[in-house]
Image (cartoon, rainbow, N blue to C red; front, side):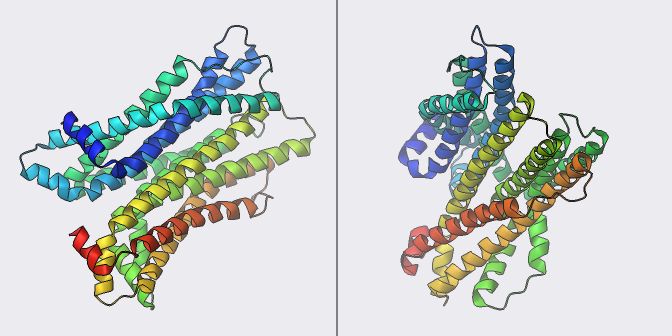
Length: 436
């Protein structure tokens, strides 16, 4: 089956481009930050510089590993779902479920390994640039020289390959199991994440306003709430669509299609909710913290600078991965609907109506994802603000949130409409015949 996986990747490389891009970016980010561990481990590095480098590598490296898994999982889930006919044909030809799993996992490992190897150069350049940022901010002594060693290289390759193998295994396992079992496990994990996130948010009130760890429970609580909402997104989207009754032809087509595709749309809602929730909570918390330090008249300590740098970098990593996940999922899902678009046009729908349908779908998904992510972000932000400043609402304006919403809307609407417009260039008869 591994030989079959190699032939599959070699014969249809276009199918695996999204997975390759996710693996490449993930490995580059992991290598960039884990190179700080190699740098901190050099002889002669002072304790302050070593602590700053180690903290950044540990925190962002952990976030990076998690996001690598989510990014690869989202692309592989769409890939495996679109190969349902191929997998069924293999099973009818005598392949066992175990053989099919080994084939899909083998494909993912090959692609991830190629992506990790390609990421070595960008990882080295990114580590050099990151160390320069630490030098300029005074968090690391300028005498500390950059080092790209075995920690960065091995961790970048192994984390990417293991994430790809695990994500591929789960994706093909979900595709070959009955829906009710998946739904039960997903619901259990969703409520567990919501309970843990609520507990984390509430624990913020038990931390002192001057404690350096004040931001941690609120931030992690918001992250877990975002994960819980993301896992429950099919049910939440179904409830929303049940109350939405558009009158235009494009709106009617959009709602009708979305009601039967809520499971597929959850792959788009998940990165959208995570991006909105984590970015809203982290950026506003950092703004509240910076304003509180400025109001006190005390200069920022090295720890405060480290925290600010980490928060901004984490949000940057989240933005990159969320955009990649959204673009990959939307591009694959929209391209896969070529036959559906052709059938709708043969049934009487105009290209403009089909394009309007895609726009309405993307708008509903964007509004749903932004709303749920904002709720999760506010759930962590408001307790932090109350403890840190004794205010019920942060003084910062809506500018940060509007920027987050603009990025989410631009990526979702732009990718959906651009891909649909390209797909609609194919004549309806040819689209139906090719897909068949």
